[in-house]
Amino acid sequence: MFEPVQFLCCLFLVKTEIMPNWLLPEHIADILPSEARKIEELRRLLLDNFRCYGYEMVMPPLLEYIESLLTGAGQDMDLRTFKLVDQISGRTMGVRADMTTQVARIDAHLLNRKSVTRLCYSGSVLHTRPSGLYAQREPLQIGGEIYGHAGLEADAEIQELVLASLALANISAVRLDLCHVGVLRALLEVDPAAKRCEAELFRLLESKDLPSLKELTRDFLPEIRQALLDLPDLYGDRSIIARARQILPQLKGIAIALDELSYLIDLAGDALITVDLADLRGYHYHSGVMFNAFVPGLANPVARGGRYDHVGEAFGRKRPATGFSLDLRELARLMPSAERTGAILAPWSSDPALRQKIIQLRAAGEVVIQNLPGHENEQDEFECNRSLAFKDGQWILNTVG
Image 1: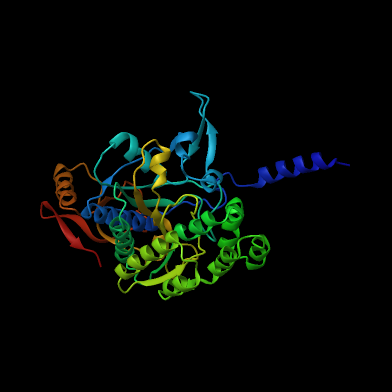
Image 2: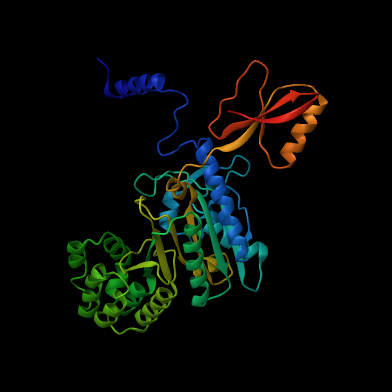
């Protein structure tokens, strides 16, 4: 008879033996040619559009010391970050789970500009667990940030850039969910008992767990308790702002938050806007307006963003900041498959005239694929609708079929 520990060890060894060595970890996937081209073309399109707005591209490293990587990022980011020991220094390092704090560090310490700075970025990030239903643990993140302007004009530009980016991906049915951390923080400032329960309140409001919320708030100030119980119901279209003004306490912080939300809603034009004053994802990270962009066909937000003025302070330089990021892999899933590119099939030959002809065609932007001796070409990306053939002493192009 096997002891329980021995049985588990044997089971593990058997499973290891039969598991294919090419199997990837859960929620980690390869990207094959046609999908990779679709993602890359979208990435170039979005980055070119960012540049039209004046955004400069930066490339943060994949690894950083954990103290720098998680500065100002909150507990949620800590849990999502893979950690390892640097064999050179012996210090703990992290694989980035988000690039926003890295870009904030670049703005604060490397560029150190006094004026407004617009930065953009693109690269892979890695999560310890998937962030949502069907999500991958290796998103391909792209985004833009504005540093140095505390006014709503910067938030409005980021909101416009998000909608423009999704429009470039031919996605028009976008729903922008808006929230503001100032509402909850204004309520907590009034009631010390509520302030002591901030973390639990945040969790219950985010999950809209009204029974538990009623139990937790029973010893709070009556006005604050009622406001906290009202927050989960303050969800809907633009009219929620007017309703919130009526039923929430007349506190300065709440008035400012609702004014800022109203301003951004007016600038969104015909975009579909919803307001959810209990949607507090990123509450500990953000300092003002927060938003999530949803599109049909995806269960998770395709883009997230908002204001995060305190992150620069964590790097020793207080500086207003707002921005957004989106997952290119998720966004590309909604787009039609990329069309096959027309290509020219050429034989393999050492003839200098053929080599010169191929060089000329490639310089003109044509795709020329040479058949290696003894092999046929097989690919998903190209359709060889023309060929090079030797006729009457020269290499000429023929239409195939």
